[in-house]
Image 1 (cartoon, helix red, strand yellow):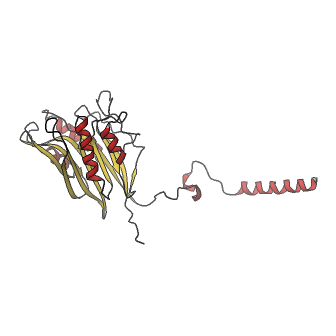
Image 2 (cartoon, rainbow, N blue to C red; image 1 turned 45 degrees about the vertical axis):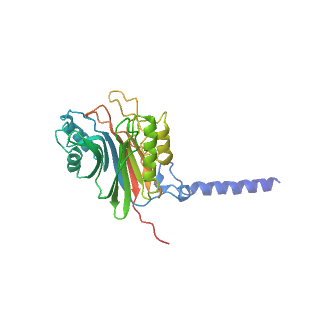
Image 3 (tube, helix red, strand yellow; image 1 turned 90 degrees about the vertical axis):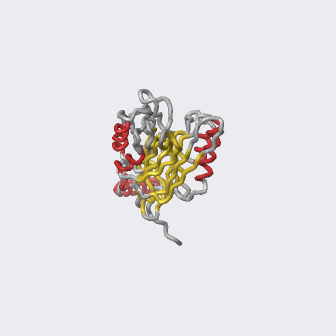
Length: 290
């Protein structure tokens, strides 16, 4: 019996020595981690990084603040930019086409969905460093007796040959009933799109206590911000609320969101709102037809 025991003990010792002499892996060296520990669905193909920015352009009649805001936007250098409460050629903007000026400064293309105001246009503008292949503007539902006309501006851009992304921006009404209807308008306008959709803007509800509008939107879109929702961005001195969101829907599973991105809080912003930013990678590897 003892002989059998010591024989087994010897075999175990040989096995331990054999295994200890085999190749080991440093826990911090992810380059040599065995393949079996990798996610088999992890995408390792080519991507294109998109820097996204949503900015409140409410400068009122203070035209001297505009160049400061342009420099703030240039400092982040977005690939896709949404401008809300934006003036184009209005009297209070000194006749300047603000979206076009920013587009020229950053070498972007621009589409504005606005309404006649103060000698020019007031509304939302979406800008892209990639070619714009389609433009879409929508007046959102409103009660005729209250509020102002809210709009959706959306563009389809080609980030790589044959790879398209829809980029949209809006600002919803402060009235809850109109806001609910406007959220439904946006969902109906985007729900059948087969390209990824990035939706930015002010939904006028806080993600910590969402109303119907934000609940509807986040039922169809996911947060693209670095945090669980989107960080507080106003007032600038001590932010207590979120007034710009970046969200997305991804029917083809083409987007990879960078959740490690730090919020861009440039103190030089020319109004009381910080911009909201996000970073998303788009898979650019074409799927093979089987």
